[in-house]
Length: 230
Image (cartoon, rainbow, N blue to C red; front, side, top):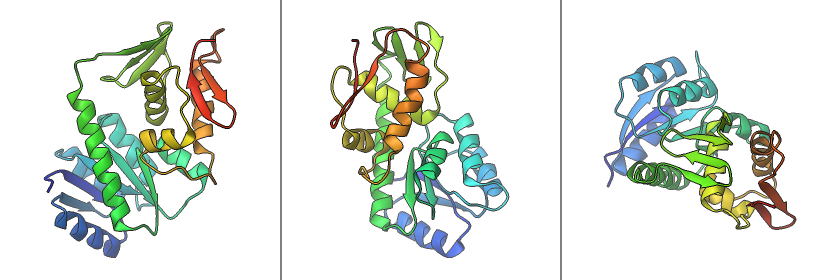
């Protein structure tokens, strides 16, 4: 059982009630909000370990809610719920600071699995404070501040870009498949019908490699991606 506090921001009161009941049966402490403005006001009071927010909300939409929460807390996991499933919508959600993305309708067991994964991951990140940074070549990752720099220059990454780069820096000179990246960085099974991982690889390449002579992020055709000096 868990005593983790969850803020649930969902304007569909029937769905919100069903989710609240199911999560409370699993031992979570659930606080409901039915619009984005209410959600942010409740979040400001503190005490939450994870946020679940719908994308389309009254007053303040889920993207802006996620951005605002992420500005206040760079560690808290955020799951975004939406009826939209296109790659562009997922990318927009991740750019706003969401850690995971669940398309309606979904199985409650899947939501619960995502919650457990994110809470475990965030707890582990908090407990491993003994290692202040990871370095590969002139690329440096600071897991406490969630920042990355190359040759001393801040790379100004979005939260999901940072997570992807951090995983690559922790696993250098090893080919990472799309399936592994999806599982370890996004906590989801890779959907071969989408290209969001390739989209994010291109995003971080523009910041990590484009301004510099030596390229570190390489594609291995048919296999995946590798962080390597060549």
